[in-house]
Image (cartoon, each protein chain N blue to C red):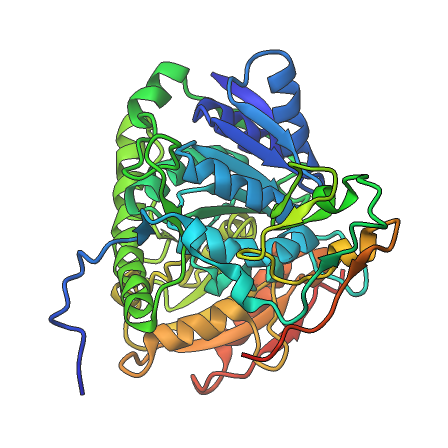
Length: 384
Length: 93
């Protein structure tokens, strides 16, 4: 059924459709409506699972850790400072191989205070062992939350579904909400092999030596590689059932593109409009949208890139002392065999607009550069 | 150099233990030792309530601290309203 939903509500509706058994939450702008709608659904009986209001984000993830160890399908949502505060528990949940699904609504980190969208919050959690999926529309948010449970439970790795603060979280779009029966057929109940059970007492996460620790992390690496396949396969299965196909990458008009705008999140929608405008001027433009960041889609990226291609990477995030984070990872993935060049552009930090016009200017600058020699991160904004 | 190539990737995702955590005698961590002065103890139960290890038992008026698990954190020493918990150093082993 088609509904008009804000991004935050699309996430909450998806979690309820996934029949989450334990939701734990703590309010933070711009994520609060995810938590509010789930609380409301619990109150009116449309959310069957438990709902816990925790006293902090660290406690949220600690409660989720317990609930997921007990075998429950679990969900939460947070943003920015809340995600940063959760950081320690993100490692615990990933190391314990619990398939938790969490929505992160991108918001800039302080200081100074800023509520605008900025990916540095989620990207600074890249080494915690969570899968990360970036969404570009409210429909994709709903679909990605549903797919996230299936991916996470297949590879036993927690999954973060990331969306842009305000641009998506508070914007209303038409969203096709599948019927509960169809979701149930796509996503069967979660049945973990090991659970916390008073009848079979076990200690989880107890001390191990370096030999076992190394092998546990190596197993995690193998399952992260499996997650690359899982994201594509689950995205294909979702498409066969519901008509909307997803994968690690989403290429738009790239078949003959010489210079490609590489984006993630809601900027992907804007980039399509920029590509259309450039194509109307007879220019060979394309857009590559990175849906997954962890596992990093290095293989898919190498298969996508053609010799001599110029990649204009738009980063709405910044690692001080290093540059835009997607640009860094793309360079690492293409080194040293590719003749493609990677041009990093830092834009829209703290919620600044990344417009169709700005994206066209970036594209032209990269496309018209005399040599394909990549520049270090360029900082840009829309002057309008 | 030992490569892990031959090591099976079927290594478990998590390692669990079926041994009881009660075997883990954390009392060996202690460097300071709480000692209750029975003549001053009012039996108010504050030490029992605050002990993070839950190793204070209440079978009699003056609580008993289980030294197999007491880590010597000193919270009972700090919280006791009657100031009846002394906190001397453990003898070096």
